[in-house]
Image 1 (cartoon, helix red, strand yellow):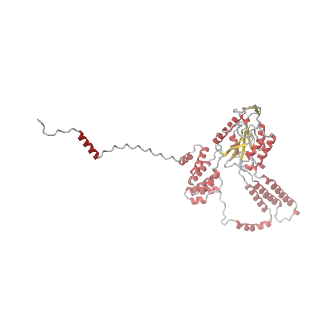
Image 2 (cartoon, helix red, strand yellow):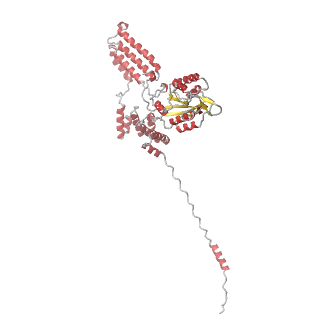
Length: 487
């Protein structure tokens, strides 16, 4: 193992020196019998070796060796784009340098990047923050297109002063890198001063810088008032990136693949921001082996005292001492109990291991036992923002179980976010589609429009009005002649 594989390598050298001293003292006592009083059966060389293992194991545990692959990849990429007037020079692969930078970032944000967040800052003579870390790729593209080279901030470019301001925004100990897209021109101070200032701050913050150079290292005219020329400085960007632990990216390189490898631990990062699992338990095992070797070589008097030492340790043991049951056996018994409907036995044998299969079974038992909070706590390491590539088989059941727990807590919004994340990672997943359709309730139908009532019938004339009308008709009719009709 190298020093880069430890969280705190400062403990390695002192512990190695103490272990070597203990080993040399044991060898001296073995070769020089008059150096110390030796009891019957004592082996000083083995005792020195045991003490050396104890000291070395203590140093190894404190140094925290790190290796393996993180279960939940995560990374924050602070994107810094040079927005000075020189970026309008027409010597880029896609026209202007600004258009070339936009095209490269469009390729990066064309597809989802699970587990990776992006922030966005512009760099001129000032640092102009645009967006905090997030995963909204459409918003990132739109925010970048709202700016134009030379329109914001002070004129020129100050890499030596601007990059430390960007790095100061990073969360402490969070896995973070900086992506600088620009032409590499420094106009506020000399390049050696800017290089020393930026690299010193970024190395102190454990922030590697990855640079993408746009433009050519030949003079190119800059459109606009006045006759100005600009020369890109890719060599300066290379020195800046390598001085902070990063590198200069090739124009045709796949940026998404680079950051996915960083997020999954496939490429090295500073240990202060590493996401590789730490294994301090290896130091404890080494120290325990040293204690056992020291006791075995201590001689006959120590063997006589061993039963009394065990009696002294007895009160510290639990009252119901039992041999530890492997987590795989506990999971098998709990699964069998869950299948036959014995929830009490399933909870009693619920596995507590960190394997994804054990966590899924424990979360399923918690959901059955009406403990959604416990299920969400168990599933938290499996339902993060990122997922390894290729997508592991436990990812979909974990997100579905977590969504079910949020529904039990009457928070369908959280469940909907998890189901949408599952569909982004595994499009067309039938369970997620069905559950999402269940959560999205159809809007209630609109009530039908009321029909217009028919016009009311004309009012019937009253009997008195009818009588008056008949009386008028009688008065208008000619009267019949009265008397005897002549023959």
